[in-house]
Length: 248
Image 1 (spheres, rainbow, N blue to C red):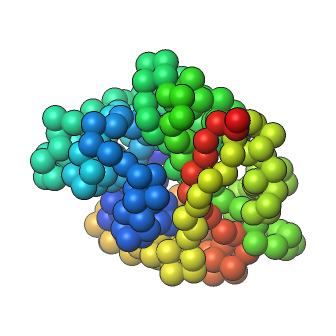
Image 2: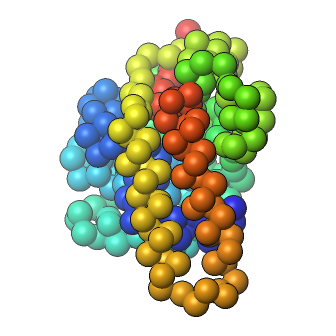
């Protein structure tokens, strides 16, 4: 799927992952955010985490994403919530972004560890920007049970892309990070994220000519994604945001 296809599918989303608004704010409480703290969010999407936290706790920071469509939505949201003076959004490759060294109290990549070619690489992207004693937030899928036959192909995942929940802990520890908290999605969280995409794609398909250049791909994405979600994703694949500190 191209970036444009994701922009279509997630047109109605504010949070571009299986996290509800309540869980997003719970995560901020867990992080013990304080006024004036700074956050770097790589692959920030529509910036809902940065803007909502800035409004609630008086934090600020920078979001980086490749999608101009998503960043326009992020800037509009920042203005709506009255925090445009505290958060900044930059368009670019999040995996190549040169952040201020040790410049942020919280560094995050929520559900986009492909920017670092996986979990370990993404930790290394974020680590230099994190202040001593700061927090790192990683959003990542995990298998609730060994992937059943057909699941990897249906979800477009490789055999080593994700592991179990405890295997994810092992990966964090191998990267020199301590897991100190987590907020996990549930079946309803997954449903709200996935099913809203079905409606958005259906609306988009109804609004364009049948021979639109993206229509066939979007119809295939809708059909495949709906079946993969119902057969595999909401049962076998978990997802969570993990709160980390540098070990020692």
